[in-house]
Image (cartoon, rainbow, N blue to C red; front, side, top):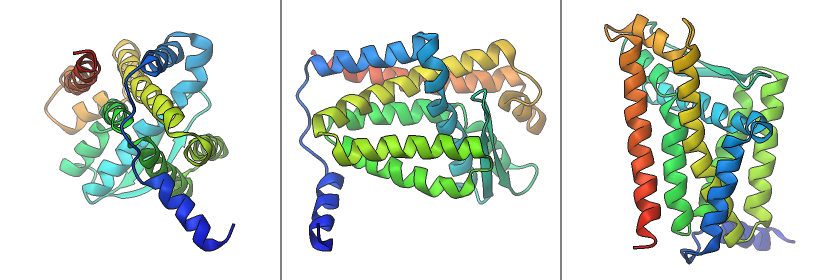
Amino acid sequence: MDVEQLGREITSRIMPDSAPATGWWILLALGVALAAVGLPPLWRPARLAVTIVHELGHAVIGMLMGRRFTGFVVSADMSGHAVTVGPRRGLGRVASTWAGYPAPAIVGAVLVQISLHGWARTALFVALVVLVLSLVFTRSLHTLAAVLGTAVGVGALWWWGSPALAALLTLAAGVFLLLGAWRHLGAVIRRGGRADDPAQLAQLTPLPAWGWLLSFALVLGACSWWVVATLASLNA
């Protein structure tokens, strides 16, 4: 394959496809997502994706607020933390700390819309670029392996997957991230400690931790409504 042909192949996989027709693949995608969240043997490794999006949410908002992203870690127990450098207090610190829990729900809801409108392979390419760039910021071997493995899977689906398969798995990933965001929020409500985001936000602002938990729940609720309304409209 010469350079010109390779360029055409890459371009064809970046450009959006026709919106897929509704059908059984949507129910299959929902079933895959529900199984991945609800079955412990699947949830334990799959929640890695939720943690990665959570930490990159901290990083992206931190950089948009003028902070410097220096690295992130995903631990063997699938917890993680991201480090941004800047003022110890202020709007930038608050925004970057707040962004983690909403990030998987927002990304998940957007992926659902993308999958239903023919942009799945475009989104996979963007995700691949983000994952490859984030490799520079990994700060442990486990994190490097986790991000690299995710990038390989996303890259393989983008390059070899058909538009139909890309749409199915992108929809499944979107619903999974949304449900996983609720599960992570439930975990921090039940077992939250001083090092968790709501407690840190309470230290940075006058609003108590429960107020920040409520703000997370409101964002997750809005994302859930968007997804449910979109899926319900397919049968309208």
